[in-house]
Image 1 (cartoon, rainbow, N blue to C red):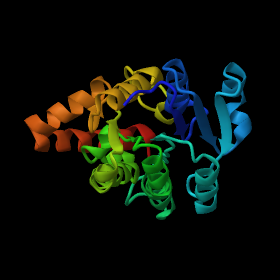
Image 2: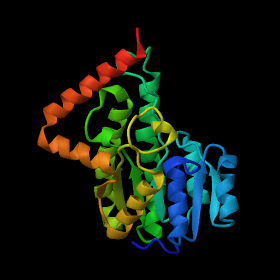
Image 3: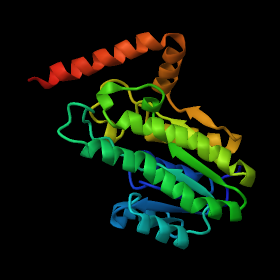
Length: 252
């Protein structure tokens, strides 16, 4: 699929990986990019940089009313990037309640599903198009230190596969981006080297152009998949030790 002259919508497009997607799509020649954000003012800088091409739209992906309204207003969309996500850094058993786990599942699984359902007929009417789901290496392997985030990304990856099969007949590409460590606010607590958000956006656009189903976008994602293939039990043990290390660093 060509990027030039397309119309795209990016959820969580005002910062981080979403902002990088907006910039990359515009640089690649997209005619217009809808920048989904809870507060349209947060994307004003993008609108100023690309007047009439970067268009902020108010969108809370967990609100079905917002999703339906945006689908009606953005019916010329041919590329949907489900980027909005949340990580609340609470454990499954150690958290005081289920609120964080429920919210992570709502934002990271149900919201992209709702967006895909709303835009599937739109993409079909516009020639097929593409859905890009920004996922995580925590959706390849269970990461205990990520609490509800990792299970929600497992669910998102499975949904991506199911949606791909459902939309194959209408020729809609459905792409899973497996993201490792990226320099964003969500990953501020993660130590070590991190990829710039622009690298993830580049991998996403390359996947659209090449018709790829799933892409490991960075070094960490590639290494996680390799470790999973080489010795899954050893990887599980190392991730369990990481959970213990975070407990020690947090103190009693």
